[in-house]
Image (cartoon, rainbow, N blue to C red; front, side, top):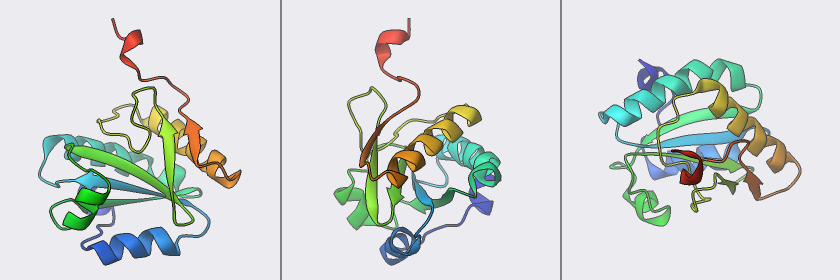
Length: 143
């Protein structure tokens, strides 16, 4: 249900326009394949939080098979990847995983995702290009 309702970006041009034209909100793009089970689960979570974050974030989905140039440029090799942009600038977030460019796993907790988006948005408004996630997702805490 989620990926049907969330706006799709069918081409690289549409992805660029979504990133360039949004002035006041964080642009969240889920790159992946619509038929992938992980993407479906992530899309469902994104759909459920979309109304809660609509004042500071806009959410899109993009099939990586339709945008091969972005696939290489952003190294989109995972099944599901969330990337964040603010005023035509790629926003990075330190999740404690070593990869600050993107969130590349399914985040099931709605409140955690809202907190991450809020943190990135607040940092972006202050002019920061890299923010620290409210929760550390490194493996050292998973026993």
